[in-house]
Amino acid sequence: MTKNDEQLLMQQLSDPKTQRVAFERLVREYSEPLYWQVRRMVLNHDDADDIMQNVFLKAWSHLNDFNRESKISTWLYRIAVNESLDFIRRKKNQHVISTDDVTQGVSQSLMADRYFDGDETAALLQEAISHLPEVQRMVFNLRYFDEMKYSDISELLHTSEGALKASYHIAVKKISEFFKSHD
Image (cartoon, rainbow, N blue to C red; front, side, top):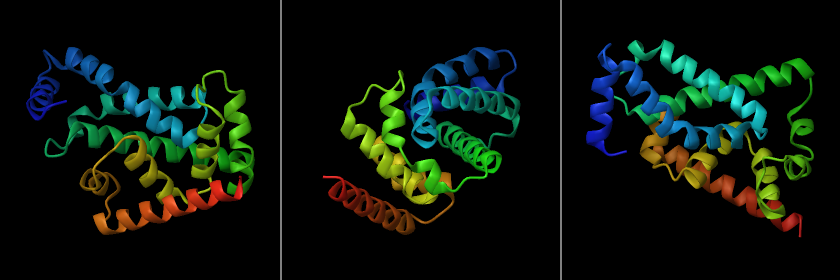
């Protein structure tokens, strides 16, 4: 979305007469990239769908709170990341299991998921990512899959670009080591 398109969309979202149509456009524009960001965090299609509903419900209900100085995409990604993290925390608390237990067998679960269209290598990549600490996992996903700029990730996660670059570098190194150990 160009800067002019985003400015027009923000104006339309601010006007009660055009707000509903503008929000429908926002949903169409951002559903797919947000879905994949959420999906990479929670791994399961049904869970990602549920979270996406919450993301857009929250966005609609907090539309008037949106800081017009931020980009719409950054605001939506922040909601999606927070909803995903909340979901993961709730799931861990409900099952009272460790993170290690959650990440075991990710590749097998993905290969059995009828919505997963990747191959074994893609499933192993997701398993490697699932072993990363939360921040490294988010930074890696946003940078690698969404090709987001460090400046945008910095705004989204409220951290310095230098710290993000270090997290990404460490994540790549850990993923490489994971693949080497699974040859």
